[in-house]
Image (tube, rainbow, N blue to C red; front, side, top):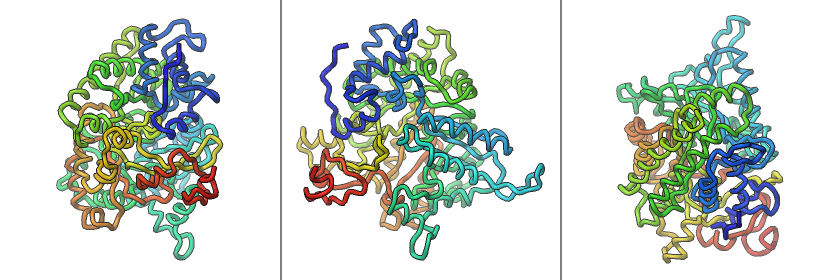
Length: 556
């Protein structure tokens, strides 16, 4: 195809693309063509394309314009001999045996080695100290298995640099729930006098802390939902207190027909009742699309692309392959919600026009996927839509991620490059910069996740409204002020618990992050003026440069 004029919205997006490029010098349009050829075309010796030439051309164009971006594993593995195109895998303990421990650790290792994240529900395993009839010993409890998986993740990095993403969950009535709730209380874990695990993690991001690779959540079911004054149940209150203080554990809500769907991927947007299920992710970029007709076409082709992915992807083992073929689970999402709203002059609310667009998303994703399956005599997907966090692909596209509001007008982002070197950049949000440049808007007046941190109801309401159109879950994090401040402290725990319990029937999960709760957090808000000074400069983590223009990489 003739290369279309293309320019990344941000320098940061251009830098992120280098980890997906198939070879040095490859352009984004070239990568898009490789992806389309590999998944729905005739690359790799496939005799028959899965989409017509016209649809392949339209799909490629939409990708080049970043109106649709498949999950990162699609971008990375297209054109390579191995086709590990799935971002994540979902596991569940199926029987309370030592053989099941060994099976899960084996499958975790295999999945992580493909670059995919993993999520596991451990609720089936007996609690710590329970007797083992066959050996006469005592159970170590499921947290021991979580810690073992966490350490596998610490040492298994796909390509030597991709950090493992892991999820673990436990039912709210489990014998070990109190231990689970406090499993990441790093500040209460002394290393020596006056110095805790939390302090060490803040000083050195790579310091090995318990469950530091793992996102943990408590599973809540109908028994909790139907509990009188459920928001005051001691487990839920303790969960809320821990979340408001440290961010973990989060909340997994599984009610009614979804009660068995306790399986989650690492970021928790994919839900499943089956062990060894698999994610299949891609996102439509609302912020890049102006008309509803075009949006419908993008959704149609994106859904069919993801169905094709269920035919073209390699998997770690036969069981995952069998579950994939049985469920044919899709996870088409959207990103750029807040940019879409800002371009139309809306506040961060689900306005009527957005409802209209989301109805098209829900209807067309299912119709298009089913039509494609019927054409090739495939079973229909069990579910079609999930909204991922889109951290990296959102940066690639230069838009707001998932359903999130702008995190901040400007921030410092830490990451590991392809050579396993820890680096950081000062980033001005692309959407914010567009508004500032094109509309002369004061950067301090733009609504952001940080400015909304004092209004959790607005964020919960937004997520609940969007969830009406999503049959899986939504990965979203409510940013909060630091613990111990006016709007986040002990006096707010019961109020927050009541609000969240009221929204719970309309959500599939929920997470919060109090600013500064974890040492070495990857994103830190900075002033617009500070980021403007250092825009386009890549720093090494140990760089002593103070943005003075002298020394370190500041002088490069």
